[in-house]
Image (tube, rainbow, N blue to C red; front, side, top):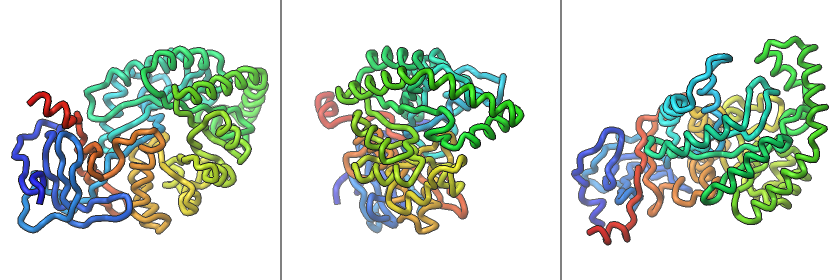
Length: 409
């Protein structure tokens, strides 16, 4: 038996922070392809070094009490910060406070890595005012939260018909060090997510207090205004393709609705199909080896809120790589366990949708799996019936490499 498994670390724990070295025992460890009952997980320098059956007589620093042990959840598309900042019309809160408040909800949901949506656009068509200044502010605040209990990152959401958004994202990508995650979208009613404009009109009636006639006229004007920006759309597509080809961004296509749109996304360097609205689009993505993201709320509800493809059906057909919270962090683990409970996926496969699959979508190879060499971002959860409860989150605050450790010795 190796030393990390045989000897507990005997270190004191800081408040809310696990030590760099520890041993977690008596958990049900969910691996990529199986569940190890009564498992022991050894952590050294913030990395997992072993996942094995817990030997009799071997003590651990932490007794997992038979709870499920999962990799920390990875959320590749969260608009929750936007909602936290504006919990109701006219009640806007400082972004800095909203991020701290939302971080608590992420931790309670078992999320250890999150990509916050920053909307690069000038619009208020759906009742939510979005502007470039707010997007840039969100980027600055999120990137400044380096010592938080969650790894906060940015999902750059580009409205392809917004010239202001395109100009701002150009500036942003030039300044980003590394590869940015970008999702491009076009929410003009009558296509994409709102192929049936009636859903959009009912949304406006329900959220903005419009009459049905006012909503209809409003949508008519949106379509006219945005049809006048087709040149901006083509410019945005061209620029995104160049940036993706150069490796400056990882490109996701939001709401593809057909095999043709998937092919066009692939042709311009797109790497991920995000929230495909039809079975045909999801099947085309699979044929091209393109990962697919669906929304956890869709899975929980059993269908899309606006009549598009069912997440449960796509999962049952093996067409989904990852689930994203969209706007509900607590929905991630609940949706995954619901899929397993209903037999639409095995437990390892279902958990993989909110861990390794999501990490792969974001291009993060260092997390999402209970395996040696991975970050020790761990979640302990009780499956519960009908809904799970997160009991603890152990996130590696820093990862110490063997090289740096030996050099400092």
